[in-house]
Amino acid sequence: MTTAKGKVYFVGGGPGDPDLLTIKAKRIIESADVIIYADSLVHPSIVEFAKDGAEVHGSKEMTLPEMMRLAVDSVAQGKTVARVQSGDPAIYGAMIEQMRVLESEGIEYEVIPGVSSAFAAAAVLKAELTVPEISQTVILTRAEGRVAMPPKEQLKDLAAHGCTVVIFMSITRTTRIVREFRAAGYSKDTPVAVVYRVGWPDQKVIRGTLADIAAKVREAKITLQALVMVGRALDPALRQPEQPGVGSATSHLYSAEYTHLYRKSQSRTKPAGSRLTKAKEESGESKTTGAKAS
Image (cartoon, rainbow, N blue to C red; front, side, top):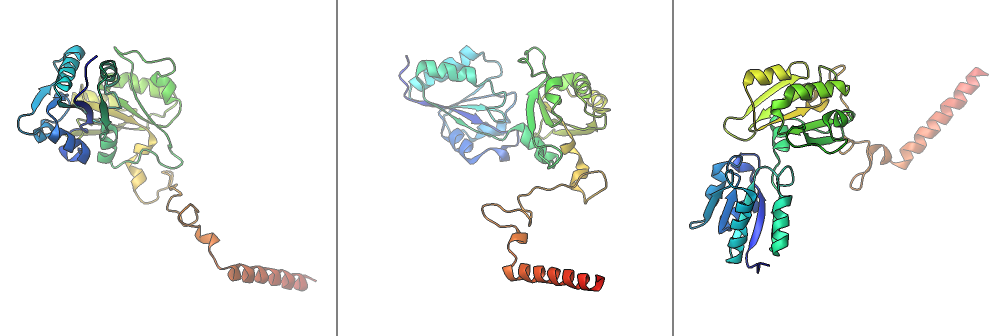
């Protein structure tokens, strides 16, 4: 059992753009004695915040035992370790196996969330992933490949829900993705967006539908670091003024007719007198109508 003198921080480095690094993440990187960062995915400018004298190690060529030995030894020396991972470490961050090692060694650690590439991509697309009456659910998943998916988590099973789906680490399986979604009932004109290296200088966005996205991806020769996003919520037409057949439902949150903790519906805040007057008028009209009828 190692005597834990230092501490390990799992830091979400965001999708690539250093401006999307959180203030807390930046502060930890600036103060860390040792930085181990995913140099194949984390923008190099992020570790430039390291203080003078800090050790900076790229992890793309390291195995788990090598990386954790470095972290454990550093903590034993009273050092603070920042393990910087891309996006948010809770999403495909391979963090659980690292935490197990730290738990077994009795080492204190903390997780600092980051901006996931899924939400950075939605921002680039100017898309709300949860649009009223179109999709109120977002599924974050991946296509099965070398990593097997648990039972009932095949794409065809998840796609059956008809909601917004964000698919990580699966760009080389675009044809299969299309086939699974079509089999699950998505129409061929369902909007699809592929966002390559979101937040990086060479970022690229490809928009299409289930009918043509596979061909567009092949033409662009994208084979890694891209998200595939599928669903009607991604339709750019939703941002435009109301159009027939596009859908114009809105959230209740700011509706004048919706009551919540901080605001009453305008229809419920009219003076009682006005309701009484209206009732009398309706009553009078009814009597008058009745008299005329007789």
